[in-house]
Image 1 (tube, rainbow, N blue to C red):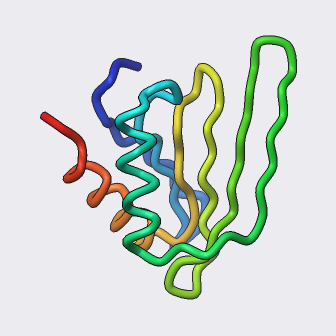
Image 2 (image 1 turned 135 degrees about the vertical axis):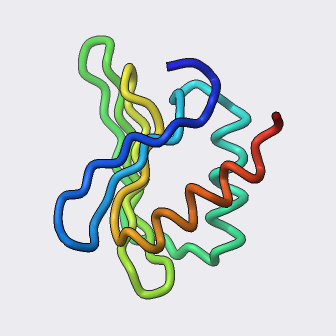
Length: 101
């Protein structure tokens, strides 16, 4: 995957999307995402964490601008955000801006 942010968008319905931001172990990416979620006044809804063999998955459900957004960190997959396309794309763009070149 590398340390760069890359977009892997998968539209699941007319206004839903998923964007993989980058590697799950990238601490700078995690900080940029958390800072962005704070900036957007994200409200926590649910949190789940699980380990199975070599896989670790952590999932947060949050609310931003009245939309439920899911943030997921999964071994070998990376950090992804999914939900309303407009909100997800705004989050991804802001995270990109926060990442050092």
